[in-house]
Length: 439
Ligand SMILES: [Zn+2]
Ligand SMILES: [Zn+2]
Ligand SMILES: [Zn+2]
Ligand SMILES: [Zn+2]
Image (cartoon, rainbow, N blue to C red):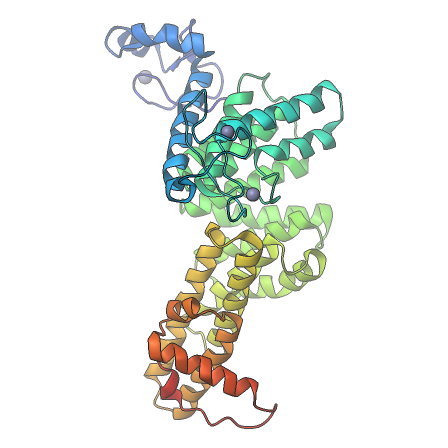
């Protein structure tokens, strides 16, 4: 499987198969003149030996990208990891690589600090054992999850940490025979890591390499759908027009293969809805999610990440719509407040999804507040004030009130109003002054 797709000298696109390459180190070129020029003037005469020694152009590239990704992850985690030690090797600096620590899962307190290289070493041994003992594909896949899942909190790693692990995994298995089972898992993990770190162009190369290998080696329909689904998300993020049709085809493909209660089908539905939202086709996104979200809630439960994403998308499709009514906006704020709370509890406060859902809640609330202040009708103002108090019940911390735009005195008034509401029998009217809770 190849990730380097451009000429080593002029960066022109190379064909998938049969490109001209340096016979020594396998660096690819679009033609002989580029190769000669690169040797004479591009410095390849000095690098060729080094690349060959590292294991060839693909391995050299993976090693380099991995070192960069680890350095970036360590830097981004620096504040969090200060004064801590690795839970695997118990050192602060890695003895061999001298790299610093990272943390990118739901571990809290002093737990979960680790070196990417220590995690990689452990995962590699774990997978090798399964292979040596012929434990079968399911056990192998189970063990492979060590590459992206924290063994302490059982949560998948996220952000730049997942990206560093993706490269560490890829550099470990890049030299395997083309299309080898583990190599396919590795390119998939690399794609997920690049996606988590928003490296869209690199992600595209990884997803396309995975897809072309799978097609060449005759992967099953479900396997191909899995890669196409990921590719559709990448296309959508890059604003490519074919994304929507692809996402729809993947959803329909899963629906036909596995039925509506399958997790892949639900994931396909969510991705299709996301593509619709990206194109501002909010009504279609809502009706798709109205149909599929209750299924996800009953099959997966409320706390699963996929259910969280679906609720999040549903609320986005509500409040981003210019035609949204007061009821739509209320529902969006309520949904996001509750989803943000669940995300914090399940994924951890610093998880990018938890942070983004909270941001969505603030955005939705800003639209709701704009509607309130534009309204002449005191009844609407009161309704929004009450709604605010109720919604704050789902986000009970003062910090959250501040996030919603309530400061100092205003926040205290909301808390007081909430207490008043709680003490009021159902059906009774509450004497609440809307201006009391305006931010
Ligand atoms: Zn060239
Ligand atoms: Zn060479
Ligand atoms: Zn360590
Ligand atoms: Zn953890």
